[in-house]
Length: 560
Image (cartoon, helix red, strand yellow):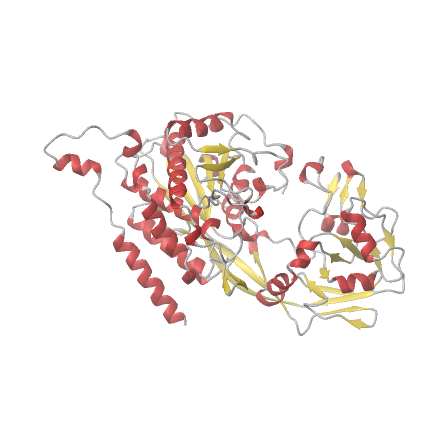
Protein backbone atom coordinates (compact mmCIF):
# COMPACT_ATOMS: atom_id res chain seq x y z
CA UNK A 1 0.00 0.00 0.00
CA UNK A 2 2.82 2.41 0.89
CA UNK A 3 4.60 1.57 -2.36
CA UNK A 4 1.43 2.28 -4.35
CA UNK A 5 0.99 5.58 -2.48
CA UNK A 6 4.58 6.60 -3.21
CA UNK A 7 4.21 5.71 -6.91
CA UNK A 8 1.01 7.76 -7.22
CA UNK A 9 2.60 10.74 -5.52
CA UNK A 10 5.79 10.61 -7.59
CA UNK A 11 3.75 10.37 -10.79
CA UNK A 12 1.62 13.31 -9.74
CA UNK A 13 4.62 15.44 -8.87
CA UNK A 14 6.25 14.72 -12.20
CA UNK A 15 3.09 15.53 -14.11
CA UNK A 16 2.76 18.87 -12.35
CA UNK A 17 6.43 19.69 -12.71
CA UNK A 18 6.46 19.26 -16.49
CA UNK A 19 2.91 20.20 -17.43
CA UNK A 20 2.99 23.67 -15.87
CA UNK A 21 5.97 25.09 -17.76
CA UNK A 22 5.90 28.90 -18.12
CA UNK A 23 3.82 30.30 -20.95
CA UNK A 24 5.58 32.70 -23.34
CA UNK A 25 5.47 36.04 -21.58
CA UNK A 26 4.28 39.29 -23.12
CA UNK A 27 7.82 40.60 -22.76
CA UNK A 28 9.16 37.80 -24.99
CA UNK A 29 6.37 38.39 -27.51
CA UNK A 30 7.37 42.05 -27.82
CA UNK A 31 10.94 41.07 -28.61
CA UNK A 32 9.95 38.68 -31.38
CA UNK A 33 7.11 40.73 -32.91
CA UNK A 34 7.82 42.91 -35.96
CA UNK A 35 5.32 45.52 -34.74
CA UNK A 36 6.14 47.15 -31.40
CA UNK A 37 3.65 46.12 -28.76
CA UNK A 38 1.99 48.67 -26.45
CA UNK A 39 3.37 48.91 -22.91
CA UNK A 40 2.14 46.28 -20.51
CA UNK A 41 -0.38 47.39 -17.92
CA UNK A 42 0.97 47.66 -14.40
CA UNK A 43 -1.07 44.63 -13.28
CA UNK A 44 0.23 42.56 -16.18
CA UNK A 45 3.82 43.57 -15.47
CA UNK A 46 3.32 42.30 -11.97
CA UNK A 47 2.24 38.91 -13.29
CA UNK A 48 -1.37 38.95 -12.13
CA UNK A 49 -2.57 37.27 -15.33
CA UNK A 50 -0.50 34.21 -14.45
CA UNK A 51 -3.14 33.40 -11.82
CA UNK A 52 -5.82 31.52 -13.78
CA UNK A 53 -8.74 29.22 -13.11
CA UNK A 54 -7.03 26.39 -15.01
CA UNK A 55 -3.85 26.73 -12.95
CA UNK A 56 -5.74 26.88 -9.67
CA UNK A 57 -7.80 23.83 -10.58
CA UNK A 58 -4.69 21.83 -11.50
CA UNK A 59 -2.93 22.53 -8.21
CA UNK A 60 -5.99 22.14 -6.00
CA UNK A 61 -6.97 18.87 -7.69
CA UNK A 62 -3.69 17.44 -6.42
CA UNK A 63 -3.62 19.09 -2.99
CA UNK A 64 -7.22 18.10 -2.16
CA UNK A 65 -7.17 14.67 -3.79
CA UNK A 66 -7.91 11.45 -1.94
CA UNK A 67 -4.22 10.59 -2.28
CA UNK A 68 -3.47 13.30 0.32
CA UNK A 69 -5.82 11.54 2.78
CA UNK A 70 -7.24 14.76 4.20
CA UNK A 71 -3.85 16.30 5.15
CA UNK A 72 -4.12 15.73 8.88
CA UNK A 73 -1.37 17.06 11.17
CA UNK A 74 0.81 15.03 11.16
CA UNK A 75 0.31 12.62 8.26
CA UNK A 76 2.05 11.34 5.15
CA UNK A 77 -0.52 13.26 3.06
CA UNK A 78 0.47 16.52 4.74
CA UNK A 79 4.16 15.69 4.29
CA UNK A 80 3.59 14.94 0.61
CA UNK A 81 1.76 18.24 0.16
CA UNK A 82 4.72 20.00 1.80
CA UNK A 83 7.10 18.32 -0.64
CA UNK A 84 4.85 19.34 -3.55
CA UNK A 85 4.94 22.96 -2.42
CA UNK A 86 8.72 22.86 -1.96
CA UNK A 87 9.38 21.33 -5.39
CA UNK A 88 7.50 24.13 -7.10
CA UNK A 89 8.99 26.88 -4.94
CA UNK A 90 12.46 25.61 -5.78
CA UNK A 91 11.95 25.54 -9.53
CA UNK A 92 10.47 29.05 -9.44
CA UNK A 93 13.54 30.34 -7.60
CA UNK A 94 12.05 31.30 -4.24
CA UNK A 95 14.54 31.13 -1.41
CA UNK A 96 14.13 28.54 1.36
CA UNK A 97 13.38 30.24 4.68
CA UNK A 98 12.89 27.25 6.96
CA UNK A 99 15.46 25.35 9.01
CA UNK A 100 18.99 24.55 7.82
CA UNK A 101 18.57 26.05 4.36
CA UNK A 102 15.39 24.11 3.64
CA UNK A 103 11.79 25.13 2.98
CA UNK A 104 10.67 23.33 6.14
CA UNK A 105 10.42 24.69 9.66
CA UNK A 106 10.28 21.47 11.65
CA UNK A 107 7.90 21.19 14.60
CA UNK A 108 8.49 18.44 17.18
CA UNK A 109 5.32 16.73 18.38
CA UNK A 110 4.33 14.12 20.92
CA UNK A 111 1.32 11.85 20.62
CA UNK A 112 -0.29 10.94 23.94
CA UNK A 113 -2.11 7.61 23.75
CA UNK A 114 -4.45 6.36 26.44
CA UNK A 115 -3.28 3.02 27.79
CA UNK A 116 -6.75 1.48 27.74
CA UNK A 117 -5.69 -1.68 29.53
CA UNK A 118 -4.33 0.29 32.51
CA UNK A 119 -6.86 3.14 32.73
CA UNK A 120 -9.62 2.88 35.34
CA UNK A 121 -12.43 5.11 36.60
CA UNK A 122 -14.69 3.92 39.43
CA UNK A 123 -17.83 5.54 40.86
CA UNK A 124 -18.35 4.04 44.31
CA UNK A 125 -18.16 0.29 43.58
CA UNK A 126 -19.03 0.60 39.89
CA UNK A 127 -16.29 0.27 37.26
CA UNK A 128 -17.03 2.69 34.41
CA UNK A 129 -16.55 1.70 30.75
CA UNK A 130 -13.83 3.65 28.95
CA UNK A 131 -15.24 5.25 25.79
CA UNK A 132 -18.86 4.56 26.70
CA UNK A 133 -19.20 6.03 30.19
CA UNK A 134 -16.28 8.44 30.08
CA UNK A 135 -13.56 9.86 27.86
CA UNK A 136 -10.37 10.88 29.70
CA UNK A 137 -8.13 13.75 28.78
CA UNK A 138 -4.87 12.29 27.51
CA UNK A 139 -2.76 13.19 30.51
CA UNK A 140 -1.60 11.01 33.41
CA UNK A 141 -3.90 11.06 36.44
CA UNK A 142 -3.95 9.25 39.74
CA UNK A 143 -6.83 10.27 42.03
CA UNK A 144 -7.93 7.83 44.77
CA UNK A 145 -11.58 7.54 45.79
CA UNK A 146 -12.48 11.16 46.48
CA UNK A 147 -15.54 13.19 47.44
CA UNK A 148 -17.18 15.47 44.87
CA UNK A 149 -18.58 18.99 44.70
CA UNK A 150 -20.82 20.56 42.06
CA UNK A 151 -19.05 23.70 40.79
CA UNK A 152 -21.36 25.17 38.15
CA UNK A 153 -19.40 25.90 34.97
CA UNK A 154 -16.08 25.92 36.82
CA UNK A 155 -15.21 29.56 35.98
CA UNK A 156 -14.49 32.70 37.95
CA UNK A 157 -15.56 35.92 36.20
CA UNK A 158 -15.74 38.95 38.48
CA UNK A 159 -17.51 41.13 35.87
CA UNK A 160 -20.44 38.68 35.79
CA UNK A 161 -20.40 37.75 39.47
CA UNK A 162 -19.60 34.13 38.57
CA UNK A 163 -17.76 32.17 41.25
CA UNK A 164 -17.92 28.41 40.70
CA UNK A 165 -16.75 27.53 44.23
CA UNK A 166 -18.52 30.19 46.26
CA UNK A 167 -19.50 28.77 49.62
CA UNK A 168 -17.98 25.29 49.16
CA UNK A 169 -14.69 23.76 50.25
CA UNK A 170 -13.33 22.00 47.17
CA UNK A 171 -9.73 21.44 48.27
CA UNK A 172 -8.67 17.86 47.58
CA UNK A 173 -12.05 17.00 46.06
CA UNK A 174 -13.25 16.38 42.51
CA UNK A 175 -15.24 19.18 40.90
CA UNK A 176 -18.23 18.24 38.73
CA UNK A 177 -18.87 21.02 36.21
CA UNK A 178 -21.29 21.51 33.32
CA UNK A 179 -19.27 22.98 30.44
CA UNK A 180 -17.94 22.09 26.98
CA UNK A 181 -14.32 20.87 27.06
CA UNK A 182 -11.77 23.52 26.06
CA UNK A 183 -14.37 26.17 25.20
CA UNK A 184 -16.35 29.00 26.72
CA UNK A 185 -19.33 27.76 28.72
CA UNK A 186 -22.82 29.02 28.06
CA UNK A 187 -23.27 32.62 29.21
CA UNK A 188 -19.59 33.63 29.04
CA UNK A 189 -18.02 35.44 26.07
CA UNK A 190 -14.55 36.88 25.51
CA UNK A 191 -15.98 40.38 26.04
CA UNK A 192 -16.75 39.40 29.66
CA UNK A 193 -13.11 38.72 30.45
CA UNK A 194 -12.03 42.15 31.61
CA UNK A 195 -9.22 42.94 33.97
CA UNK A 196 -6.29 40.72 34.86
CA UNK A 197 -6.26 37.02 34.17
CA UNK A 198 -5.81 35.08 37.39
CA UNK A 199 -7.33 37.86 39.47
CA UNK A 200 -10.44 39.11 37.64
CA UNK A 201 -11.17 35.96 35.69
CA UNK A 202 -10.03 32.33 35.44
CA UNK A 203 -11.12 29.44 33.26
CA UNK A 204 -12.25 26.15 34.74
CA UNK A 205 -8.82 24.50 34.87
CA UNK A 206 -7.09 27.59 36.28
CA UNK A 207 -9.71 28.16 38.94
CA UNK A 208 -9.77 24.49 39.94
CA UNK A 209 -6.01 24.54 40.45
CA UNK A 210 -6.23 27.69 42.56
CA UNK A 211 -8.89 26.00 44.71
CA UNK A 212 -6.72 22.91 45.18
CA UNK A 213 -9.16 20.65 43.33
CA UNK A 214 -7.91 17.09 42.73
CA UNK A 215 -9.52 16.76 39.31
CA UNK A 216 -12.46 17.75 37.10
CA UNK A 217 -15.43 15.68 35.98
CA UNK A 218 -16.91 17.42 32.93
CA UNK A 219 -20.53 17.06 31.88
CA UNK A 220 -20.41 18.31 28.27
CA UNK A 221 -22.79 20.30 26.11
CA UNK A 222 -25.07 19.02 23.34
CA UNK A 223 -22.44 19.52 20.64
CA UNK A 224 -19.89 17.31 22.38
CA UNK A 225 -22.51 14.66 23.07
CA UNK A 226 -23.66 14.71 19.43
CA UNK A 227 -20.05 14.00 18.43
CA UNK A 228 -19.37 11.50 21.20
CA UNK A 229 -18.24 8.73 18.83
CA UNK A 230 -15.86 11.07 17.01
CA UNK A 231 -14.44 12.42 20.27
CA UNK A 232 -14.02 8.89 21.62
CA UNK A 233 -12.12 7.82 18.49
CA UNK A 234 -9.98 10.95 18.57
CA UNK A 235 -8.92 10.48 22.17
CA UNK A 236 -8.88 6.72 22.68
CA UNK A 237 -7.84 5.49 19.23
CA UNK A 238 -5.81 8.18 17.46
CA UNK A 239 -4.43 9.81 20.59
CA UNK A 240 -3.84 13.45 21.40
CA UNK A 241 -1.09 15.23 19.50
CA UNK A 242 0.75 18.11 21.15
CA UNK A 243 3.52 20.49 20.17
CA UNK A 244 6.46 19.82 22.47
CA UNK A 245 7.41 23.48 22.91
CA UNK A 246 3.87 24.47 23.88
CA UNK A 247 3.58 22.15 26.86
CA UNK A 248 3.15 23.32 30.42
CA UNK A 249 5.47 21.91 33.10
CA UNK A 250 4.45 18.50 34.50
CA UNK A 251 1.86 18.90 37.21
CA UNK A 252 0.43 22.11 35.74
CA UNK A 253 -2.40 20.23 34.05
CA UNK A 254 -5.27 19.11 36.22
CA UNK A 255 -6.73 15.59 35.61
CA UNK A 256 -10.03 15.69 33.70
CA UNK A 257 -12.58 13.25 32.34
CA UNK A 258 -15.74 13.84 30.32
CA UNK A 259 -18.72 11.70 31.33
CA UNK A 260 -21.81 10.47 29.52
CA UNK A 261 -25.41 11.41 30.44
CA UNK A 262 -25.80 8.05 32.20
CA UNK A 263 -22.94 8.81 34.55
CA UNK A 264 -24.11 12.40 35.01
CA UNK A 265 -27.46 11.08 36.20
CA UNK A 266 -25.73 8.63 38.54
CA UNK A 267 -23.56 11.39 40.04
CA UNK A 268 -26.56 13.53 40.94
CA UNK A 269 -28.93 10.76 41.98
CA UNK A 270 -30.33 11.61 45.41
CA UNK A 271 -28.66 15.03 45.47
CA UNK A 272 -30.15 18.48 46.06
CA UNK A 273 -30.65 18.82 42.29
CA UNK A 274 -30.55 16.15 39.63
CA UNK A 275 -28.51 16.35 36.43
CA UNK A 276 -31.51 17.13 34.23
CA UNK A 277 -32.64 20.11 36.29
CA UNK A 278 -29.10 21.50 36.43
CA UNK A 279 -28.71 21.08 32.67
CA UNK A 280 -32.04 22.82 32.01
CA UNK A 281 -31.19 25.68 34.37
CA UNK A 282 -27.87 26.33 32.67
CA UNK A 283 -29.44 26.35 29.21
CA UNK A 284 -32.09 28.75 30.53
CA UNK A 285 -29.33 31.14 31.57
CA UNK A 286 -29.51 30.41 35.29
CA UNK A 287 -26.36 29.05 36.92
CA UNK A 288 -27.20 26.96 40.02
CA UNK A 289 -25.26 27.59 43.22
CA UNK A 290 -22.40 25.20 43.99
CA UNK A 291 -22.89 22.49 46.58
CA UNK A 292 -21.12 19.46 48.03
CA UNK A 293 -22.37 16.06 46.92
CA UNK A 294 -23.17 13.29 49.39
CA UNK A 295 -19.88 12.62 51.22
CA UNK A 296 -20.41 8.86 50.85
CA UNK A 297 -20.35 9.22 47.07
CA UNK A 298 -16.80 8.96 45.75
CA UNK A 299 -15.03 8.69 42.41
CA UNK A 300 -11.55 7.38 41.66
CA UNK A 301 -9.59 7.80 38.45
CA UNK A 302 -6.37 6.30 37.21
CA UNK A 303 -5.39 7.37 33.70
CA UNK A 304 -2.27 5.88 32.16
CA UNK A 305 -0.74 7.47 29.07
CA UNK A 306 1.86 6.31 26.58
CA UNK A 307 3.81 8.83 24.51
CA UNK A 308 5.40 8.61 21.07
CA UNK A 309 7.28 11.22 19.04
CA UNK A 310 6.35 12.72 15.67
CA UNK A 311 7.15 15.78 13.55
CA UNK A 312 5.41 18.10 11.18
CA UNK A 313 6.46 21.29 9.42
CA UNK A 314 5.58 24.74 8.23
CA UNK A 315 6.61 25.46 4.65
CA UNK A 316 8.46 28.79 4.45
CA UNK A 317 9.88 30.63 1.45
CA UNK A 318 10.94 34.17 0.48
CA UNK A 319 10.72 36.03 -2.81
CA UNK A 320 13.40 38.68 -2.48
CA UNK A 321 12.49 42.29 -3.16
CA UNK A 322 14.28 44.62 -5.56
CA UNK A 323 15.00 47.62 -3.33
CA UNK A 324 18.37 47.54 -1.59
CA UNK A 325 16.85 48.75 1.69
CA UNK A 326 13.17 47.74 1.57
CA UNK A 327 13.96 44.13 0.63
CA UNK A 328 14.90 43.65 4.29
CA UNK A 329 11.21 44.04 5.15
CA UNK A 330 8.52 41.50 4.31
CA UNK A 331 4.90 41.31 3.28
CA UNK A 332 3.77 37.98 4.72
CA UNK A 333 1.25 35.74 2.99
CA UNK A 334 -0.27 32.86 4.95
CA UNK A 335 -2.59 29.90 4.55
CA UNK A 336 -2.90 26.61 6.40
CA UNK A 337 -2.27 23.57 4.26
CA UNK A 338 -3.61 21.01 6.73
CA UNK A 339 -7.15 19.72 7.18
CA UNK A 340 -8.72 17.10 9.47
CA UNK A 341 -7.61 13.87 7.77
CA UNK A 342 -9.61 10.65 7.67
CA UNK A 343 -12.64 10.44 9.92
CA UNK A 344 -16.07 8.97 10.42
CA UNK A 345 -17.57 8.07 7.01
CA UNK A 346 -20.40 10.21 5.65
CA UNK A 347 -22.28 8.54 2.79
CA UNK A 348 -19.41 6.07 2.52
CA UNK A 349 -16.68 8.72 2.24
CA UNK A 350 -14.18 8.95 5.12
CA UNK A 351 -11.60 11.31 3.54
CA UNK A 352 -12.09 14.94 4.56
CA UNK A 353 -10.40 16.52 1.53
CA UNK A 354 -10.53 20.16 2.65
CA UNK A 355 -10.70 21.61 -0.85
CA UNK A 356 -12.03 24.93 0.39
CA UNK A 357 -10.65 24.64 3.94
CA UNK A 358 -7.92 25.43 3.24
CA UNK A 359 -6.87 23.87 -0.03
CA UNK A 360 -8.15 27.06 -1.64
CA UNK A 361 -5.82 29.29 0.39
CA UNK A 362 -2.92 26.88 -0.02
CA UNK A 363 -3.39 26.88 -3.78
CA UNK A 364 -3.85 30.66 -3.99
CA UNK A 365 -0.51 31.19 -2.24
CA UNK A 366 1.19 28.76 -4.59
CA UNK A 367 -0.28 30.60 -7.58
CA UNK A 368 0.97 33.91 -6.18
CA UNK A 369 4.48 32.53 -5.74
CA UNK A 370 4.43 31.43 -9.38
CA UNK A 371 3.11 34.82 -10.49
CA UNK A 372 5.93 36.64 -8.71
CA UNK A 373 8.50 34.35 -10.28
CA UNK A 374 7.10 35.00 -13.77
CA UNK A 375 6.49 38.75 -13.42
CA UNK A 376 8.61 41.14 -15.46
CA UNK A 377 9.26 43.34 -12.40
CA UNK A 378 9.93 42.64 -8.75
CA UNK A 379 8.28 44.21 -5.70
CA UNK A 380 10.46 46.49 -3.59
CA UNK A 381 9.89 44.62 -0.34
CA UNK A 382 10.42 40.89 -0.04
CA UNK A 383 7.43 38.57 0.15
CA UNK A 384 7.31 35.90 2.86
CA UNK A 385 5.21 32.81 2.17
CA UNK A 386 4.23 30.60 5.11
CA UNK A 387 2.05 27.53 4.68
CA UNK A 388 1.07 26.72 8.26
CA UNK A 389 0.58 23.20 9.58
CA UNK A 390 -1.77 22.31 12.40
CA UNK A 391 -4.24 25.19 12.08
CA UNK A 392 -7.04 22.71 12.61
CA UNK A 393 -5.40 21.60 15.88
CA UNK A 394 -5.45 25.09 17.37
CA UNK A 395 -3.37 27.41 15.14
CA UNK A 396 -0.21 25.42 15.86
CA UNK A 397 1.82 26.40 12.81
CA UNK A 398 1.26 30.15 13.05
CA UNK A 399 1.85 30.14 16.80
CA UNK A 400 5.06 28.19 16.29
CA UNK A 401 6.29 30.49 13.51
CA UNK A 402 5.53 33.67 15.44
CA UNK A 403 7.05 32.29 18.67
CA UNK A 404 10.12 30.83 16.90
CA UNK A 405 10.41 32.86 13.68
CA UNK A 406 12.91 32.07 10.97
CA UNK A 407 13.06 35.75 10.00
CA UNK A 408 12.83 38.72 12.38
CA UNK A 409 9.15 39.39 13.15
CA UNK A 410 9.70 43.13 13.44
CA UNK A 411 10.50 43.16 9.73
CA UNK A 412 7.07 41.82 8.74
CA UNK A 413 5.04 44.89 7.78
CA UNK A 414 1.70 43.14 7.14
CA UNK A 415 0.28 39.61 7.13
CA UNK A 416 -2.41 38.67 4.60
CA UNK A 417 -4.17 35.46 5.59
CA UNK A 418 -6.28 33.35 3.23
CA UNK A 419 -8.50 30.68 4.76
CA UNK A 420 -11.36 29.48 2.51
CA UNK A 421 -11.91 31.53 -0.67
CA UNK A 422 -13.28 28.85 -3.02
CA UNK A 423 -16.99 28.45 -2.33
CA UNK A 424 -19.96 30.51 -3.51
CA UNK A 425 -23.59 30.58 -2.52
CA UNK A 426 -25.64 29.69 -5.58
CA UNK A 427 -28.75 31.56 -6.56
CA UNK A 428 -31.84 29.97 -5.01
CA UNK A 429 -29.87 28.05 -2.37
CA UNK A 430 -32.16 27.75 0.65
CA UNK A 431 -29.97 25.41 2.71
CA UNK A 432 -29.71 27.06 6.15
CA UNK A 433 -26.11 25.84 6.48
CA UNK A 434 -25.24 28.00 3.46
CA UNK A 435 -27.03 31.05 4.83
CA UNK A 436 -23.81 32.97 5.54
CA UNK A 437 -21.83 31.69 2.54
CA UNK A 438 -20.62 34.58 0.39
CA UNK A 439 -21.66 34.97 -3.24
CA UNK A 440 -19.63 34.63 -6.47
CA UNK A 441 -18.39 38.23 -6.38
CA UNK A 442 -17.96 38.77 -2.63
CA UNK A 443 -15.70 37.83 0.23
CA UNK A 444 -15.61 38.49 3.97
CA UNK A 445 -12.76 40.76 5.07
CA UNK A 446 -11.75 40.67 8.73
CA UNK A 447 -9.23 42.76 10.66
CA UNK A 448 -8.08 45.15 7.92
CA UNK A 449 -8.72 48.25 10.08
CA UNK A 450 -8.39 46.76 13.56
CA UNK A 451 -4.75 47.82 13.89
CA UNK A 452 -4.05 50.05 10.91
CA UNK A 453 -6.42 52.57 9.32
CA UNK A 454 -3.98 52.90 6.44
CA UNK A 455 -3.98 49.16 5.73
CA UNK A 456 -7.78 49.11 5.65
CA UNK A 457 -7.88 52.02 3.20
CA UNK A 458 -5.18 50.46 1.04
CA UNK A 459 -7.06 47.14 0.91
CA UNK A 460 -10.25 48.83 -0.26
CA UNK A 461 -8.43 51.05 -2.75
CA UNK A 462 -6.78 48.11 -4.53
CA UNK A 463 -10.09 46.28 -4.79
CA UNK A 464 -11.98 49.30 -6.17
CA UNK A 465 -9.29 50.02 -8.75
CA UNK A 466 -9.11 46.42 -9.94
CA UNK A 467 -12.06 43.98 -9.88
CA UNK A 468 -14.34 45.79 -7.40
CA UNK A 469 -15.41 42.71 -5.47
CA UNK A 470 -17.92 43.13 -2.66
CA UNK A 471 -15.99 43.26 0.59
CA UNK A 472 -18.34 42.22 3.41
CA UNK A 473 -17.25 43.36 6.87
CA UNK A 474 -19.99 41.77 8.98
CA UNK A 475 -17.49 39.60 10.90
CA UNK A 476 -15.01 42.45 11.34
CA UNK A 477 -16.30 42.90 14.84
CA UNK A 478 -14.67 42.22 18.22
CA UNK A 479 -17.96 40.85 19.57
CA UNK A 480 -18.63 38.51 16.64
CA UNK A 481 -20.20 35.43 18.30
CA UNK A 482 -18.53 33.18 15.71
CA UNK A 483 -15.12 34.39 16.97
CA UNK A 484 -13.67 34.14 13.45
CA UNK A 485 -10.86 36.53 14.38
CA UNK A 486 -9.49 33.87 16.73
CA UNK A 487 -10.02 30.92 14.41
CA UNK A 488 -7.36 31.32 11.75
CA UNK A 489 -3.63 31.95 11.56
CA UNK A 490 -3.68 35.75 11.24
CA UNK A 491 -4.49 35.87 14.97
CA UNK A 492 -0.99 34.85 16.01
CA UNK A 493 0.55 37.58 13.86
CA UNK A 494 -1.85 40.21 15.22
CA UNK A 495 -1.01 39.27 18.81
CA UNK A 496 2.63 40.09 17.96
CA UNK A 497 1.66 43.57 16.74
CA UNK A 498 1.66 42.84 13.00
CA UNK A 499 -1.33 44.35 11.13
CA UNK A 500 -3.36 41.71 9.31
CA UNK A 501 -6.11 41.17 6.77
CA UNK A 502 -8.10 37.93 6.75
CA UNK A 503 -10.02 36.81 3.63
CA UNK A 504 -12.77 34.23 4.17
CA UNK A 505 -15.77 33.00 2.16
CA UNK A 506 -17.93 31.91 5.13
CA UNK A 507 -18.96 28.58 6.63
CA UNK A 508 -21.04 26.25 4.46
CA UNK A 509 -22.77 22.88 4.42
CA UNK A 510 -19.52 20.99 3.74
CA UNK A 511 -17.39 22.68 6.38
CA UNK A 512 -15.27 19.95 8.04
CA UNK A 513 -17.07 17.24 6.08
CA UNK A 514 -15.88 14.83 3.39
CA UNK A 515 -17.96 16.70 0.77
CA UNK A 516 -15.60 19.71 0.92
CA UNK A 517 -14.25 18.54 -2.42
CA UNK A 518 -12.78 20.06 -5.57
CA UNK A 519 -15.96 19.67 -7.61
CA UNK A 520 -17.71 22.18 -5.30
CA UNK A 521 -15.14 24.95 -5.88
CA UNK A 522 -16.02 28.13 -7.80
CA UNK A 523 -12.67 28.60 -9.55
CA UNK A 524 -13.70 31.86 -11.22
CA UNK A 525 -14.36 33.37 -7.80
CA UNK A 526 -11.12 31.90 -6.49
CA UNK A 527 -9.19 33.48 -9.36
CA UNK A 528 -10.72 36.92 -8.77
CA UNK A 529 -10.00 36.87 -5.06
CA UNK A 530 -6.47 35.48 -5.47
CA UNK A 531 -5.65 38.15 -8.06
CA UNK A 532 -7.02 40.92 -5.85
CA UNK A 533 -5.04 39.76 -2.80
CA UNK A 534 -1.96 39.43 -5.01
CA UNK A 535 -2.21 43.05 -6.13
CA UNK A 536 -2.82 44.07 -2.52
CA UNK A 537 0.50 42.51 -1.52
CA UNK A 538 2.18 44.47 -4.34
CA UNK A 539 0.71 47.73 -3.10
CA UNK A 540 1.95 47.07 0.45
CA UNK A 541 5.33 45.92 -0.85
CA UNK A 542 5.93 49.08 -2.90
CA UNK A 543 4.78 51.69 -0.35
CA UNK A 544 7.63 53.96 0.82
CA UNK A 545 6.69 53.27 4.44
CA UNK A 546 5.13 50.27 6.11
CA UNK A 547 1.42 50.52 7.02
CA UNK A 548 1.19 52.55 10.19
CA UNK A 549 -0.17 50.76 13.26
CA UNK A 550 -2.36 53.45 14.79
CA UNK A 551 -4.68 51.31 16.94
CA UNK A 552 -4.40 48.75 19.68
CA UNK A 553 -6.34 45.55 19.17
CA UNK A 554 -9.68 45.73 20.97
CA UNK A 555 -9.48 44.11 24.41
CA UNK A 556 -11.84 41.34 23.30
CA UNK A 557 -9.30 40.27 20.67
CA UNK A 558 -6.30 39.94 22.94
CA UNK A 559 -7.62 36.80 24.64
CA UNK A 560 -8.19 33.44 23.01
